[in-house]
Image 1 (spheres, rainbow, N blue to C red):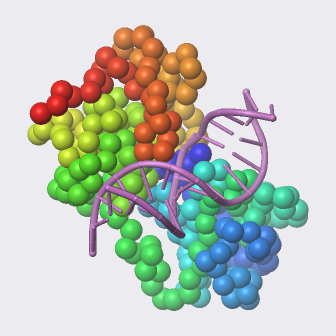
Image 2: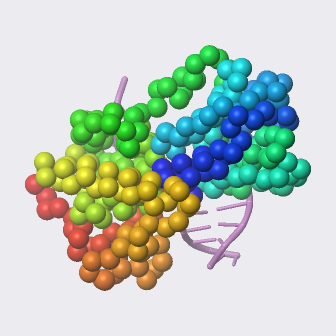
Length: 269
DNA sequence: CATCTTGTTACGTT
DNA sequence: AAACGTAACAAGAT
């Protein structure tokens, strides 16, 4: 499920636990989610530590705990965070539970594409510090986008938008929304955009990211009815402008939908 | 039963 | 060396 705004939504679901001590943990440590975690160390250090704060960057989450403990979470395709009662009994897909006096903080992921990290140290772990600038932040500059598209000039635009090094937080539906609003065909090679098309992509990228954060993050509600979002799945989907049928094709390994009128393929040079 | 999935990574190829 | 394309991972929904 989770892209930029949904990740932020799930981050907030553990907020009630801030300032409280972890008294116990439960984890399905044999699952692939924990393949990068020293489980023995986690089980030893986490109880007695206080949950301090959390942050999201793209699709990555970082939770900090007293004693210099850092818990990284990637939700993968189907990961969720939620709160339960303190006597919660984890079921099959509840792979990580942090028990507090008043509640249980639960990470659930049926499909196991998520990933947990655990680091110890005074500063945030290196994998976190070296993440690319969030698209939402002022540090994400136009020259970053231009340089990234140039580096991946042969990739279809859709595939380039899915690369987290360049567009952190963008996933399948957001990429389709961005390209529809920019009037760009998903198959266009990333290095083939002229100045005006680059500008449209830049503005659309920010419009969709900001809009998703505003509409989805607070309560996981859907974006406005005018968004392409509502049309891109079902076979009956139509362009919100023309009300005509959409084109569909796998691009960059994902199902991609676009309006053949708004997003016509550019003529060869 | 076959096909689909809002994500990433390993690996072989260009 | 870097970029590119695809299979694989796992489980549930349709």
